[in-house]
Length: 378
Image 1 (tube, helix red, strand yellow):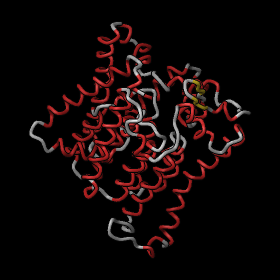
Image 2 (cartoon, rainbow, N blue to C red; image 1 turned 120 degrees about the vertical axis):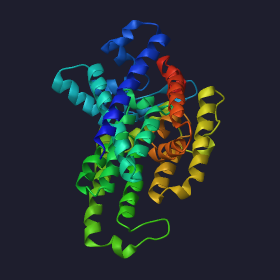
Image 3 (cartoon, rainbow, N blue to C red; image 1 turned 180 degrees about the vertical axis):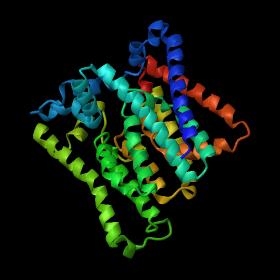
Image 4 (cartoon, one colour; image 1 turned 90 degrees about the horizontal axis):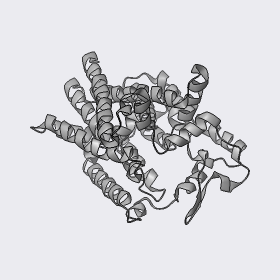
């Protein structure tokens, strides 16, 4: 573990946040952004209002299915049940224990988890690539990549990614005792957390030489050691099942979070039918962006292990099944194998450090839409 490189990752994270402030000043034109409250306000947009509502009042009891959420033309209803509880819960606990408001709590967790996310990505790259300098550069690419400003906002990206990447790290390093403490929060942050357990477990099998693209050793899978360690991964599904029971008690439906997605005009369909369904710029751009990532993933299939490929494809296809490309750049941001592939390619370029400047410029460009509450930032 290269402590010096971790230090530079933290410094880069702080400087990036300073860049957000300076950029926000020129966009908003108000020097108040340089205050703590000002910085807090620019990190608080869109769905953050729902997280604040849940953290403050928790989830409401529901008697009518329509109260979970629905959409019918211009008529729609949205509810708190569309959001999973871990992120609101840690804010709620922080608010009550420290006697602070949501803004302060959200800012603290944002700063903490954004640092954990960037450090975790670097550590995984260092272990995975066995090259600390290459890992540092790729981590800077990850930090500066367009749409990765979400990791520094009051959103669940940094929280989700922190538990995901450290789960991979614990598996890579053989520290399996930490798996339950990482996968339980993972499945309670975002719905795709439960699906993320599949590539996590496949990575575990790969690390234990049970699985690869060309072989699968069934006898080894049923060894006493592997069976015992495999049980640790069940903690995630059990936690998710308990939350489903809680939803049933509060709403009458085990999968209330899924029903509530209707309030955001989402409906289940074949994933590729989600492309270009609307003519607005965000939908068109998100469709093109997602297709570009899919093409990159296809060409990168041979370079990555089965687990990494499964992580990529489940993370892309699952949200597309909702029939919408809204937020796809945000969902793609947590697919770290994509960042590793792009980072390695940029590292091979002659002007690789100039590329970092270009990435920062592109990130600030899309951050502009976040600052002005444009739907492109959803």
